[in-house]
Image (cartoon, rainbow, N blue to C red; front, side):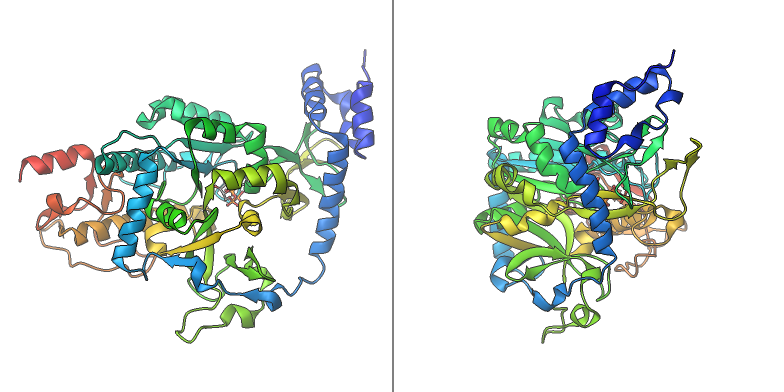
Length: 509
Ligand code: UTP
């Protein structure tokens, strides 16, 4: 006998203005019905109605001409900015010391944003599990784990105290289970399991341009994570700030999963922010060229925010200072410093004010005959919050500029999609960096005829370094400590510098 939908499910969806979600109910198996009912029960009708209406309206607004944000834009004032390249070595040393001090006092945590679906890269597993083709075969997760181990070890050596940098990992329904399994299979990359805290962000239904929920299967609502700014809601839902308090954490370094050059708990950045008394900070890189499509950190009507490239006029984009640098050049790389107190103020007070951004996407759906359709053009909307939209709530905001070649190479697209932010560009960025470290430490590379390969500085991202050299993060985080082993020595390419290789080099000195 065919059972009608349970009244409470029907009623909930009617109140949310979404009765069509049940249109295939009679064709569903008992298990599919159970799953759909469970999914619907998680939704709050009032919130759902508002979400769907807002998505449709946002789409409408998006089609209107963009506001002239650039008219009110002001560049960052000098007093809130610092730079790794244009600062006296003495100040850099001071910030580094301060950062290591905080780390050694167990006051610093790292927080990874890993809830994204990675649709552009297009692999059926979390991006952190991606291997970009390094000689070691290491994945992004492994590289990050080893950098945490190394920074703990360096802090310990400097200050003579054992310390822990806990690793908070925000995942979503898409990434939690595979990430958990992957970490367990790899023995947590030799970190202590209890110092890795995975938590899940919220999912929201995807809707069509009329604000109607999209079904991806007859009995399955298309859901998407609520953007990396879903962090703040997720911190509350999962009581993460309480966990931080229990551990005595005061400072959090937040970063994205896809930047292969990311520094973990970067002591210089943390030291800079702490010394400046900041509650919120952003790392930026100089824009590569005026029309580079990255958001810039700046002031708009006196409020710190990230302005997207599309919101700025050509004239503003090309504006330059007397020294020739672009006026709006602070490219946002989604790498932030927050005090735990600031995160508390956001989660307790400001989170509901965060702007919702509209992402127009191609979302697979079932047609009226119940067939799955993979659309060729965008057909739906996902609503997202952005992690950086909290700058406006900061009482003391700072910005720290770093060199792109040292700290930023994101993995966004598949190699087949072109030449920007791909596995190849990420792999090359890391290999160039390690090649530079090795050469600076005095190494020479030999070709197959035992002839020295002339040193090169980096030419273009598209080019491979003259020799392949990969240095384990367990050996060196920033190129430090290599000279003792590499100076005036010759190596064949490829060189894979692991801890074992380093020990062997030490022995044959
Ligand atoms: P992106 O905006 O590049 O999105 O995320 P993505 O999901 O990785 O890739 P596409 O757009 O689908 O191709 C920047 C960072 O924010 C995280 C991602 O995991 C990445 O570290 N993120 C994004 C979340 O944690 N949650 C989200 O809902 C979205």
